[in-house]
Image (cartoon, rainbow, N blue to C red):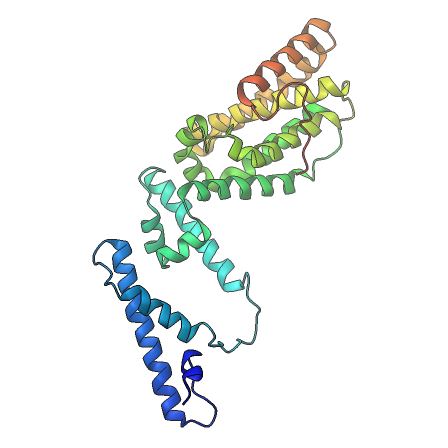
Length: 305
């Protein structure tokens, strides 16, 4: 066996099969031992001997050119098994957040209950924040999909459709969302008005804006957009009411939506008055400055959903 063959981590053609196996096994065991020693040093439970780094380099020389047989079947990338594992981890995390609250839930507990390693969990969700952002993304995407079926008509009827669609989409997730109220309201990085969550917020907001802009009785576009943004904020207030509603099956929320439905025709009439129109536009500017730091007055706030 030549030295060049040894450095390549394999035996020359023609060497006995048993010798090839023994050498490969020895290389693997040496690599495992050195890597384990390296990991102990990283963890702080053991130091590297002076020769370990040289040994690690030697093992790399042995193994770097060893070709791993290419696996047949599905190519590398997102697999059905991977997608199923990601969904199981996500569903488990949302369930635990609903049971214990956001702060009390740990990723290790999520991994244990989902039956996966912590390493696999971190591959999909490197933090609890990533789970919350995924929840926002999933819900806003489903909401936009269902809201696309909004019927034609007057803006007040379209607003009620958008509001009731939101309640229907969020319904199965009420318990975890209730646990996330402190995060949604006050957290600067994960809250509803945080820059990191703008992708989902604006996806939903655009539904309410378009409900007015494309209505059969739409006012001039600048006013229609302002009304749409204010209706989005009203929708958030109704969602918060719904999350806190203690009545059986949230009957008080159903009554509130019905009350809004009765009041909206009068609100539509008042928009014919110049002072009311001016009030709506001034209020819109204040809300945009206070809450939507990524959407200042005068900016282009339309995004693709």
